Length: 388
Image (cartoon, rainbow, N blue to C red; front, side):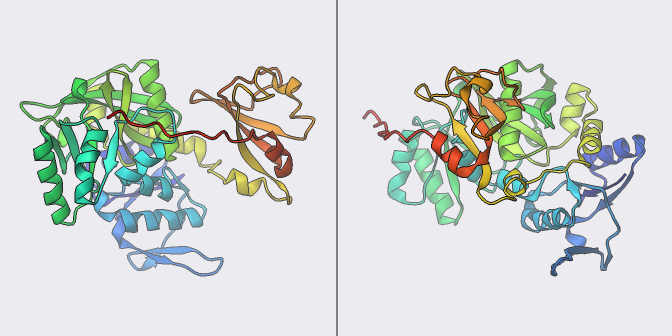
């Protein structure tokens, strides 16, 4: 198999380790500078040139896209996708994960721990936003910051207000986030490959520094995650659509709190701390998945008009609740249950004897008109008023 690594730093530890692992497993590998590509868009012939010459065939691509070249880098990855080349992480997932606000907005739709956060532009909205996330101290983040740059701890409301106004004056987009006091100076980095955590480490800040990033002098130690933290890390990567991800979590009083999901996580710190050959795990993933790239299920299964895929949420009042798939009658309606999401755990291709429980989310395929009839009417809900 021929593998391309998109990287501007061929001598970087992560790039070298991926090359070594690929060669060790009998593959050909080449490091290609992301910014040396040209993208050619023509009808039925998406193409790329590299350094002005036609690009040879590759079976798989490992994107190592730096934050400073996200836009062009994602365009290059997207072009590989259009050419039918397997990419470890797709362009859309990389783009979404790089946007801190957008990531949190997506996570907020799921039952997964995130620190209360706020994004404001108006001066009059600053103090209410600080109050809404729990009051001072608060974390102030630049949306475009990386490796701990642009992350500020404001000890008081006055300081927070002054910092935010200053950053707004400099045309910077900032986010206000609750300070998780019990996790001050430390966090968890879980490295997800495919559908499992292959390694994890705890990072601790040194001295008076509250940021635990290794680039800011943080120290690391291997850690064995419990089931809750492992499931949270895998779910976070899956929600972002990433096959390979570094998931950063705070150890909150109520469990894991997702801080960030990195689409190009570094290998040096976590391989050194855990003594796990993560690079080989990534190459193994490519070997498993290159023959079966992601497909748009909705698009593939709607060849015949009137058919499609829908997600059905089962509540206590649903006629499906408590029934097995076989006894529920969905099969008689020509509806297939492809997957059950139960508290964030996927049950793929469930058998007929599988019981449907309240709270389940059923991914179904069938006639859209029939699926529509299985959707319970929406209940009107009132927004909770904040106590003053």
